[in-house]
Image (cartoon, rainbow, N blue to C red; front, top):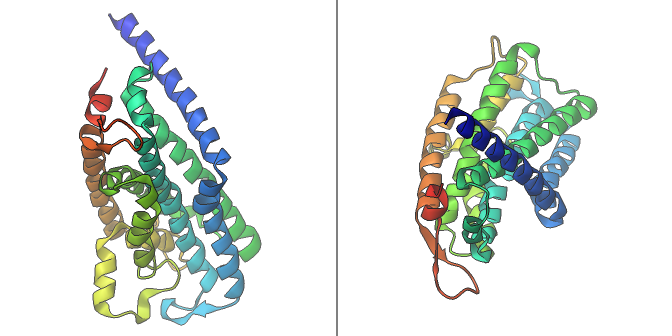
Length: 283
C-alpha cells in the first residue's frame, strides 16, 4: 500500500510540474495579461522613481523618496501578479468551461489548484528580483541583510493572502467581462490610501484607519519597514504580519467556498451550472 501511495504521489507531483509549465506558457503568451499585471508595476517604478529621484520625505526622517517607493511598488507588483491575475484568469476559465472540463482529465483537482498557485509564486519571485535589481542599480535603493527576514515574511504572507483572495473573489464576479472592472474597483482606490504611491502622513485619520483594515496597507507598510534605513533588527513588523495572516485565513476560506460551490453558468453553454465542488472533492 505504501509503495502504491508513493507511486501515486510521484505521478501527481509530476502532473503538478507539467501543469505549472503550461500555466507559465499561457501567462507569458497572453500579452495583455502580462503587460497589465507584470510590466505596468515595473513601468510605474521607472516613472515615479525617476520623477522624484533626489527627493526626500521629511515626515519619515528625511529618507529618500525612492527608498519609500521601491518597496511600495513591489507591493503593487505582488498584488497585480497574484490578486489581479488570479481573479481575472479564473473568471475567464470558469466562463469558458475549462474548470468544468478539468474533471475529465487525469490531473487531480488539488494538483490543478496547486499548479496555478505555484505558477503565480514563480511570477512573484521574478517580479521581486526585477524590482530589487532595478531599485539597486538605477536608484541606489538596497535592502539590508539584517532585515531580509522581514522582507521574506511579508512577501510570503502577502503572496499567500492575495493569491487566495484572488481565487475567492471570483465567486462575486458575475462574468469574465466584468472581472477587470470588479478587480480594479476593489484594488485601485485602496492603493491610493495604502502607502504605495505616497506616504499617508497628510491623509485624514479616518482614511488611515480604513486603510489599516485591509491587506494592501499591511503589505506595503511591511515592505517599507524592511527597506527603511532607520529600521533595526530583523525588519519584522508584527502588526502588518498579523493583518496579512488574518487576510490569508479569510482568503483561504473564500477560496474554498468558491471551489466547493456552484459558481454560475458557463457562458455560451447549455445552462448547466459549473459546480466546482465536484472538481475539488473528486479523487
